[in-house]
Image 1 (cartoon, rainbow, N blue to C red):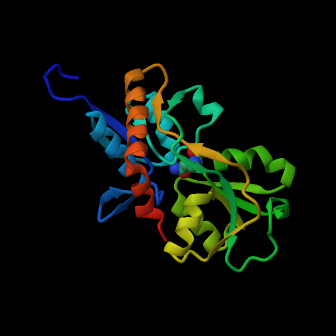
Image 2: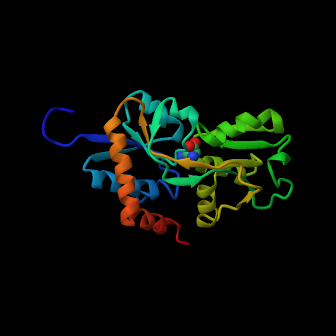
Image 3: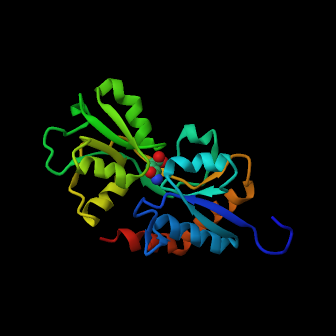
Length: 230
Ligand code: GLN
């Protein structure tokens, strides 16, 4: 950047309220995504600086040139592929419906007529909810982060929410959320690391090389075990 011989520092956008992928413990970022990204930067010899923000702000921040990379439990979608390039997939996920722990009248998305569904801005869950709103006849309320969305169902203001399966399956027992997963998974998708399209082409190759190295060395499995072993 400034022409001296220090390494370039890439800015990496993360969603810091998204355990087990990205969260903070005593002010320190941790999680599967953080460990993966930090290990890639290390094995490929580049420097990174994390920038935590609401998920919905990440792609706009990339477009504004404020971020070089994003790792945020971000699902690879065709719509996003118009704006960003994705690394090779690194985690299988997908959406699920979630209701209050005591709720008995909602077993699937077909039971949502007249109900209120909480989603998070800019996510695949929000998109899924919007795409099916008139079909199933519910009302959508949007939140900026997952904890706010969870709370809305916990306090009874919303009847259901849509979240990534691995995230809610981790959060419910971890935080005694009093929520339950219902029905079949709504879709399947995969997480990828994003870089702005047409920029940082060599960074994308480094990220893919780094990811492969983590898989080959067993480090990738160790990272997953560290967070998901129970
Ligand atoms: N995987 C979902 C998406 O890509 C949610 C990501 C998130 O909330 N951090 O939209």
